[in-house]
Amino acid sequence: MIERKGIFQFRGQDVTVVGEDVRVGQPAPEFRVTTKDWQDIQALESTAGKVRIIGSLPSLSTSVCDRETRRFNQEAAALGDSVAILMVSMDLPFTLNNWCAAAGVEQVLTLSDYKRAEFGEKYGVLIKEHRIFRRAIFVVNRDGVVVYAAYMPALGEEPDYSEVLEAARKALA
Image 1 (cartoon, rainbow, N blue to C red):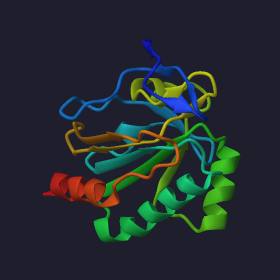
Image 2 (cartoon, one colour; image 1 turned 90 degrees about the vertical axis):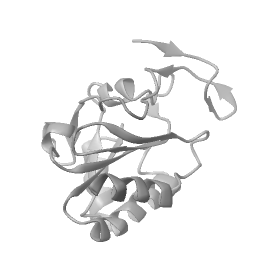
Image 3 (cartoon, rainbow, N blue to C red; image 1 turned 180 degrees about the horizontal axis):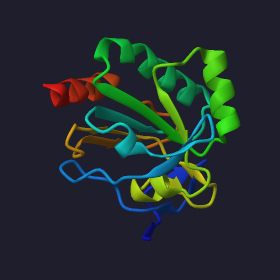
């Protein structure tokens, strides 16, 4: 797997990002992750036929990740059942389950990559030194093609929600 330096900083220090950035137009890489209920799933296969919004999060324990996941949970109702929203972090399933219960988040699928870092490597978001993800967001159409990809330049920056939701709506049409 490719390792890149000089493209991202964590707390003012250059870090190593594992994997290549995902690009619009390419097939979305499949990835195996663990649900908050400790079930291993193939994420894209388990949501086949739907438009997917996939968020890469450092940790649900941070205020920005908390806010982002709650926002997508609210937006999910307007998008309908044809869209699946997957938020992926290295948080343990215990953390995902407890956070979802406390936050009342039921529309978003929170997933853990703690076992394999497969999502992190395939989507170019794994920060090697800290085993957390840099923030990114992807929209994958029903055919499994990436139609939107954005990597945030800093962990504390949120995605452009209107752009992400517009990309999802276009993919539904």
